[in-house]
Image 1 (cartoon, rainbow, N blue to C red):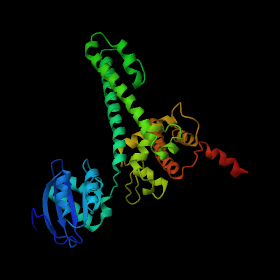
Image 2: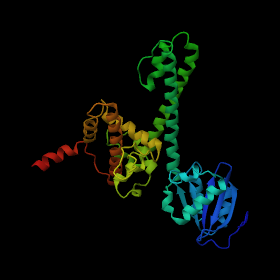
Image 3: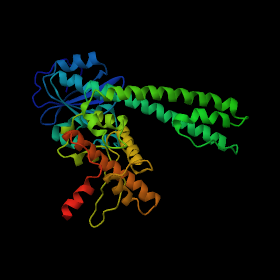
Length: 359
């Protein structure tokens, strides 16, 4: 084992594990027999990583998905290395270890990558342009959640004094709430209402940018044929998945976004569990929001709406929640199908096919 060397004479069969942090990245190199041949650390910057790994012959490098993994994986791949970005859920044994240290984490990643990369559930990072456009959606989402928290705070503060603000949309809250603020709370809550108004204006600006960005991607247009799927959901679906060919079948899109139930079968017992919530949380929320619209009072009559309403027919809150998730799951499959085929969406296709079969 050596520390701090700048060259490796032999890199055949070499696997490198990287444990990334904001300041330093620890690395561990193992050979094809599993022997540790070098470990150390390097600053988490492009120049430092380029200097260190440009002198290493092409090898397999494993790092866990995280804030730095997109640019690091592209940098290392450009240097000629095979880069595997490990799914954090698959390497949970690192976080749960009783001996968690950066050096041991790097070694474990290297060993897992050497034995079977499939154990790591490798993920595929999107390209720089898609990442930049997705940052727009995430920025808008952050503002929306901030506005929601402020609105909830103002409503709660008014309720605590025995008052009540009128029901209204988030976009009109700043106009309708101000006149109903109690005099005692007006000096405290008016600045918050002003901030909510500013957030609403910024969200509107983001919406305009999203519409412009969506026009650059032809695949988004076919998804927007579905009522309830606007520029946000369609663009988010396009950017998160980016390459539709990553799925052999459209039904694989639902597990990718974490909308399929978890499974924990043991003998005769197979309990009903919640969804996995794997994949991108923002895309999952967008699909669920679209499902709410499809099943809501303004959703047009479609096969998807009819199917969802049958699931929610009992009227219980649990049945309604399960119906929304089920529609969101089916919607993910439908959007991928429309994206791949580019076909015209038929909202009531089943209704047309039923008489044909009967005839």
